[in-house]
Length: 122
Image 1 (cartoon, rainbow, N blue to C red):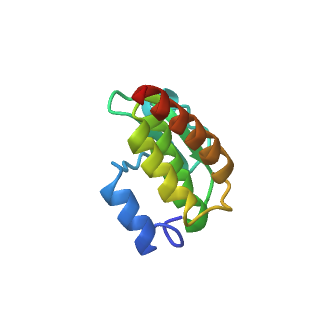
Image 2 (tube, rainbow, N blue to C red):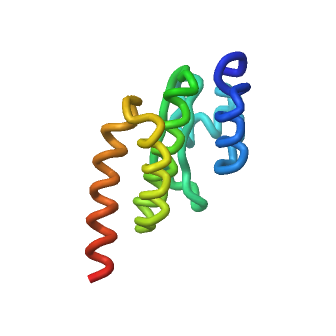
Image 3 (cartoon, rainbow, N blue to C red):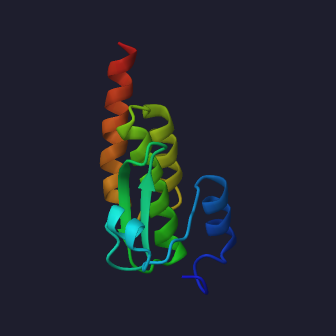
């Protein structure tokens, strides 16, 4: 991924402006056990308290990595009851990547977030 995916400007911009992307060696026993890392690369979307909301494993091209990261961001917001930021992340995913592997789950989550947002306004 270092040679193909991470050098892409759109991946670099997303990972450095919207995430805290630590890199941990899979041989780091404590963290590998804590986050159940059995294969590399493993990406885990955590909230500020360290709760996991999404994970992806394996090599991904930018066209799949970006949607996966945005889905993770949307899930963090959704799980925390933050419908509007969740909707923004999911729209950011679905507009340019409607055929990505993350799109079906993002579409489902988007519908749930919209419903939650409508109910909250009543």
